[in-house]
Amino acid sequence: MIRISVIGRLGQDAVVNTVNGKTVINFSMAYSEKFKNQQGEDVDKTTWVSCAYWTDKLNVSNYLKKGTMIYMEGKPEAKTYNNDKTKEVIAQLHARVTSLQLLSAKQDENNA
Image (cartoon, rainbow, N blue to C red; front, side, top):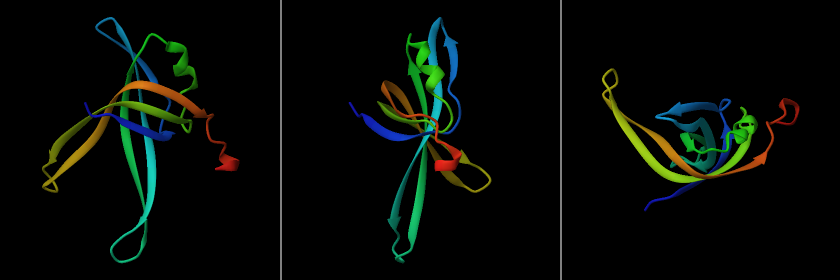
């Protein structure tokens, strides 16, 4: 089985939903990497991951606020679709979260 682990910040507050009588916490997180491209220019690349955390531990959603840094492990689920306007295939990374750890509180705007 393929597993992913990501450290990143939440892009928005988590949302609690009920699907077929089960609770899921949905959130999106971003992680960034810096590298030099073939021309030697510095590049910052941000990747977004949409996450679904099926759990009974609803109190964790109180801490999943925009800007909070978390560590997440889960099963990746890549979804692709065609963009008819630009004739390109767009991939979105989704994850079914199996483990979640809070690393920091929401990032203070003055200490960003």
